[in-house]
Length: 407
Image (cartoon, rainbow, N blue to C red):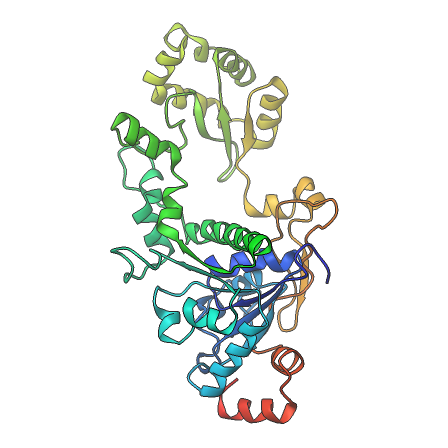
């Protein structure tokens, strides 16, 4: 395919969510992303190959929907770095690549002979982007971590929850997705620098500081006011609005989000809900509403529970009050005309899973838009195409290496 990045080749040694998510975006814009995996572990240096969700009752290293979702549009090869021939193959691939990226723990690539100094000896202008919990320098360099631990250490976990309860956390490896976006930006910035200067570089990305950077108001509140920002659930963090929260609606597990910005919004909410108590004198000002937030929320919840979420959200937005149904994934993916028009969940045909939906890229380019039409590679699917046609090895070599476990 052609695209804005079709002139780029990426040697992708990354995996999981953090690295694979970044190179997925590059592939969607046309970069040739070559996903290198380990044949000796059936590709399981990327744990997503061995876990669900699955599309049906079948199980196997090529059937994980998560792996497919994060590796669409990529080429897949297997190279065993325990063999001299495998290490030489990777050197050959680096020599014809613009970018090498990985998200192993600090020091792993150096031990394998492919740290930044070794890479630029192969290709002087190579861009090497590493992505790990604590980066390659500093006192925490040798510690290893995982997405939920990154979230706890960065402070994200502390901010999620209800007042006077334990932190709820941000779910499964939320920060891995965030660091993937940072990694994409890092790769593009380094490429731009190389265009201007001819120089490659090592970009050292650490996900814990990346998580901290997602807490600007909490950090500011501490550095300026010396106060920690306690979890407030869905209420406004700094007392900007009240009421501001999630409220029950008619039916099983149906909810609505409502944010009242001022006295006028509160009056409109009271009218739509037919609940005059919301405009009582004790709720007349923002400071009074904040002081009585529990009582205010209880009144709204009692009134909203007799409304369907869809109808109530429509009535409130028509009146000018910010509101939305708390939508489930099926409502967003299967029932939202805006997402359908955006094409955010394209369908690809996987060689083993068959037709499946995957996540797209939430932006549109008028001239060089993204495209996702190719499923993630099965293990070693493109060995012949990449190791043979691109790197110039013949079928006999590839067959001998396959029999010995080199590829």
